[in-house]
Length: 429
Image (tube, rainbow, N blue to C red; front, side, top):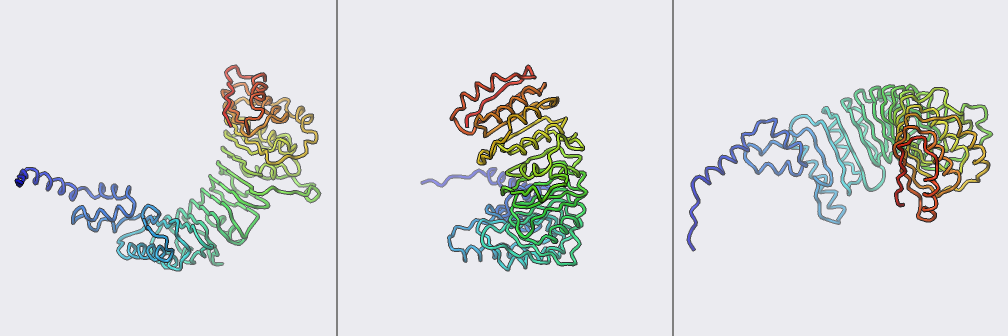
């Protein structure tokens, strides 16, 4: 075999390329590292001597499944490996840490997390995300409440016990709590004492059942869980709300006689609402006690409304109609039939005919209805929307099953449409 001759210009070009990587401007290097996982950012140390310690100044540390690739079924080995990696990174890190995220599918609430939170509390961390995917609730270390530079806090499967001296996070704008446990007073004080809070997500919580939301700067609220009551106070800037009540509420009408009703109470502090999603059984909660024909103050800014509804339930249908009449600028409507409940029909058809009159939706353009089975009260509602929406462009209908779907479609196509451009789109279940 003959030894191949490597052109001198090839070696020269290779050196130039390496040198180009070494001499990239600092802002370009930072940009490159910011788009890499922590694992890949550490591996850039082999590019050249000038890259060897670049990653240790990363302000955002994310320890997730992508960064922590551990191929083992031994839980003790996995736990020790995660702890060693996080310890090693924090030991070598230099400079401020703005974001710290710990989320691995095999992560459990270990005492080492306490050390890491204590370490972070001595700096100026702005974003803290902790997701414990296995095991019992992890009791959040008290030093987290010293992190007054936090603007985003996200916790999953944690137990929160703020000290009595805690006066809130002064810079917090976003709070995401899922599968958490805390006491009633602690929750109320946490929300009300974070005066800059703009986004609040609350899912599957324990320890409190009354949601009292006092947040003057709140813009976004997403909640799903089991609760008994919800009250908004001083939430006049709230624009986007999504609420799911995961249990069928059972109300004793005799206990609430004389009250204004949940529907009126719910909207009293929401004058700037733009998007509303009523999920699971929450419409039934809103329909409890007194349902007016219209709200005392209309939802003038509401443009999107999504409701999960049992068309067999009279009060839910009346509550839905109240919301529609009180939303003069509604443009998009989604309705998902809750067919798992088969309530007594009572006098739905006759009462609803009276309520369908004298109501126009002059801005409604798109309607989606899903889960219907062709019951008379469902078709009456569809007919009502078609005949009172003069600018409607499209109504999408998706039945619950193929049984009777063709007959239902033929019935829908016979309904009169107030809009000449309205089309009915059928979607297979």
